[in-house]
Length: 213
Image 1: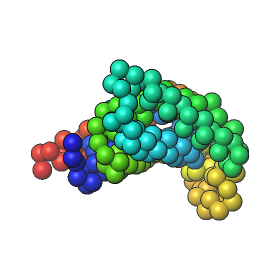
Image 2: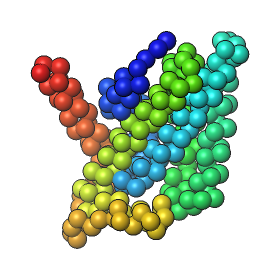
Image 3: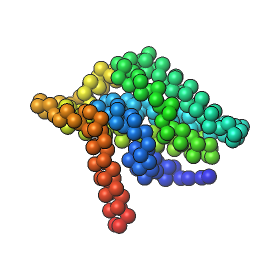
Image 4: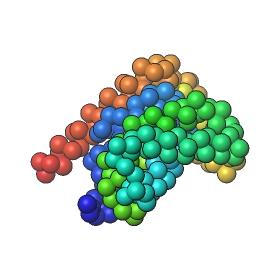
């Protein structure tokens, strides 16, 4: 199976976006995205696991028996998530305290297992790497965008506490838009689904206009 790099990137970031097209990975999309910082952190952690899992599966795809491939993939993903979990705890502890529970849930994120099964197990290392990176970036963009909208409407800030979570060098991201707070609903789970619904409608509108242009 051979697919161009441009097609893989467009598919992962837009056409087949994990959240906005496939509608999977909604647990972190609803629970973690109370701010743009949290969404970005969760997205990058998931991207790292997805890319490495894709590459490793592409490397060993010809020596794994089809009968046991799913258990092998799950064990591989679980091992990678454990490593990422420990690295975050060691080097980005503040972010780890916010995302700790949800980092472990990456193991059961359908986006990772789905791409490993549907793409990496049928393609070479380079396409698998690009596919994992594109899907991960699409996931990260979606989570960050949902987080920023919820944060803006709910708290009147953008990338709040980025310096505490990601390091002092990210302080430039912190923006206070207004001082009057916002709608509490937006930083509660129902707010996540409301924002997601509007984003899905917006993407569908853009896709429809693109197809009719």
